[in-house]
Length: 157
Image 1 (tube, rainbow, N blue to C red):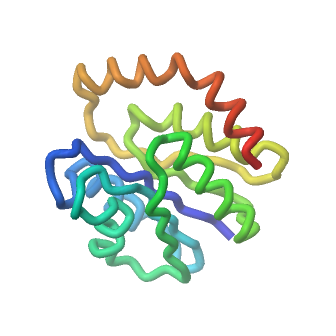
Image 2: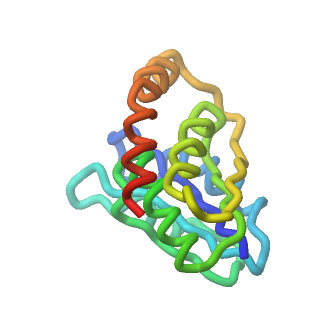
Image 3: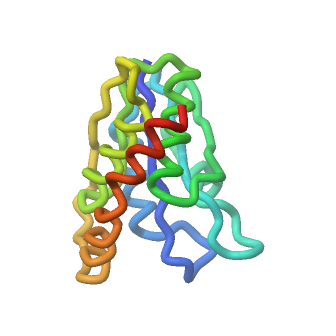
């Protein structure tokens, strides 16, 4: 079984699905096969707003065997840990990460660390949304923490 994991995105300004997140969801609908399980991952960043996972579930139009919501993932490492738990529970042979191109390498690195010791393959299916200067700087800053977070993810099994 494949697990298609769609990582949420929010800029904290709206109660609706952000266009970056919508693009990831649309890409996942093309990527997902009927017998895949799909994990929609993301929490709420504003009071009284639904979690990103729920917003994605409301917008999801593809028919797949199973859709799982992870409403608690607050970060990329949180996404990776939730994905690893779901992959182990489902005995997935592959995880397909659906995220933005500028976020893919970091998300894949942390997911692979969280899946250490399994035979589960991690592959990327990225959107083509461009990275703004702000996003590129944020990614650069986040990469400084990846070695530490990868160890945390690997030990969290």
